[in-house]
Length: 303
Image (tube, rainbow, N blue to C red; front, side):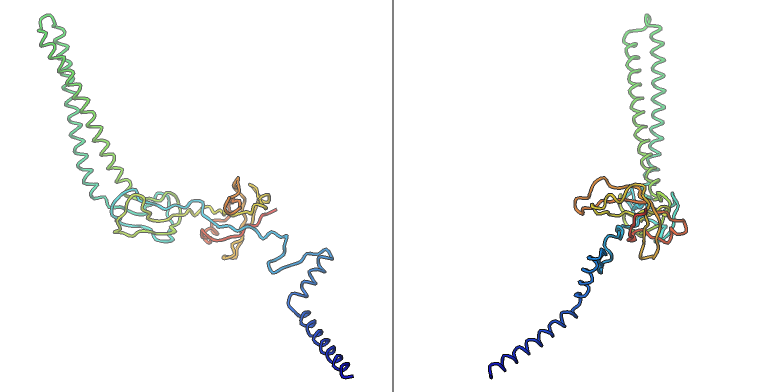
């Protein structure tokens, strides 16, 4: 009798624990959603997740860029005399961005121009001497029967010598002209100018800095045309083609602008397994100033 009572008590306790575990399992997070997912699949519906609906195209990640962006650099050695732009300034093509001090080159140019004038004078004198030698030889030739051979040979020699001196004078003038042209080019490059209409995106140097050829002075981006570069997974390559309309969402500005695919890379990038494409954006002039280059955007293919 005692054994029956103990067995009954153990069974009762086990049954209570079983109900407790079952209740906790049914109230656990995700169990009900899993059942709903199974029921949705069974009824032909589509299950959802925290990442959004599957099967919809969330678009491709891209970056908005200006059509032209360059670092304006110096072509000379020297000291930076002035910088005429600041961050955000709008400049026209050909406008002065900076000036390089070329006082030493100005002195060299004065010396070179004076030397050139001297070489040109020597050239004129050599030309006259050659003409004189030719005339003398012609007179002696006309009187060859009455002139000693030695005198005639001397005249011929003087003509050849005058011709050589004239050639040398020509070479000297050419050399001096090249030097003058070189120094004048230095003056032309002393004024660093904008290559196109744009906005100053960065200023790298200040007046007084020592610079060399290739030193960047400012970064200039065009303010007329915007485009977007984006990456397409290789399994979705067929969804993008040249000429297809797109919609570009710039979430940081809470705006969306239309565009059109301009180019698509002909091969998949080996490292990222992506295909890169570029598209132009259809932005009005008043809206262009509101969209800075470098913003992250999402590209959604149009119909």
